[in-house]
Image (cartoon, rainbow, N blue to C red; front, side, top):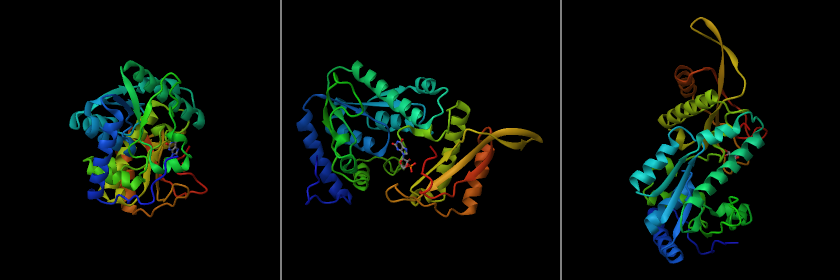
Length: 324
Ligand code: XMP
């Protein structure tokens, strides 16, 4: 297991981050030579920082693969393409696998089955792309120090992510000794935008675990649009700086509403916001009524098929942060 040296300074400012970056650039160049490196780029903090670091070190020898599973938040995949392909000139393979994922999920309402389908399909899509690429010898991963400590090194072993036996890569893990706050400082020093570096945690199965029960397109759209409004309004109110994680949830039942004098049977949207240190327990922040009411009003007016907005007041425990 990799151990963080006792004398390793915590990276707290740009100067220390630049020093770290220079060291890692040299190390990666020495490890990789003129070979190619593959990276699954989700757009999350860790994989984005690894991508930016490796682009600096080896440029087009890095091949980034971004799989859009159709369960990303609004604008997320577009941002990955904009930053990495357009601004950083990365070698980026973008795969829109939305139809494939949503097709596999039809009729599946069980939360764990949904997670398995999404995770399994993700590996298959990534593997298919990896097979198409010639001459890849290394796999880069956004493993960070808590992953190593918490999983006892499991995530740091070869072929995690379930790639098959005949696809052996050597690993490149340039941020594996960093804590999350240090990864953010390094990301900023690499010039990544704040909204990417400060991103809140987002589950691998994405919106799939927030569109409760069977994922249907109308509810997924309501979820994505309401989540975008929530994020926008939290940013306007400055809550994006103080609240740890916030998102909307769309349940798999409908509720009666009235629209243009007619009774409708429409969707509820639940607002979830939590503060926590380690996600093991969480509290519900006090949000100003004016902010909540503005968000509710915008969701009701701007998102099709929504007739009700609720605010979840449950701490963890007994509730979990996500709804499924
Ligand atoms: P819970 O709901 O267990 O969530 O209180 C704790 C934290 O973990 C995130 N989470 C996930 N992350 N895959 C992930 O990568 C998942 O399946 C998953 N489920 C929950 C959740 O967003 C919260 O930050």
